[in-house]
Length: 173
Image: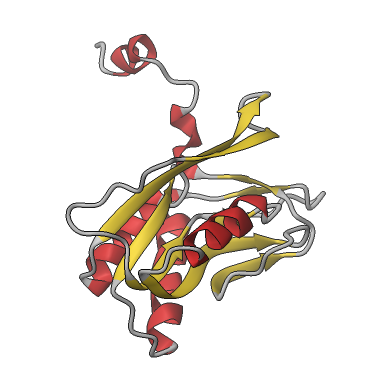
């Protein structure tokens, strides 16, 4: 639900999962056959996992990080993992790159450029749940364009500040 000021978007677990399912249907409707899914950790892990299951395709993971300051709200230096984790073989063929959102577009653009430099990848397409209006990169597939570029409050953020002692208190009678 978008707040009246247009600066915040609050997403429930149900809304989040429906968006992932809508994204799967958009990819399916394109009739593009892909061989593997590469998700960007952390935001792309849940959508990547669901798409991997729905399409019955192997899932690879690449870790990226750029949000570190102010409880993860300030973008810093972009770090891309040196290696891509996958169960076997190499990232090759037609690859669907999955993340949760195109925020500024910096991360997606950097990853796409790196992947396009890999000779084993024949074709690359990108899928996200949201694209912010300020993004410099527009993925091939997305569910929602957010022209006001709100801060998205995703349902799993409740765990960002939860530590084991706080979790234990939830189960104390």
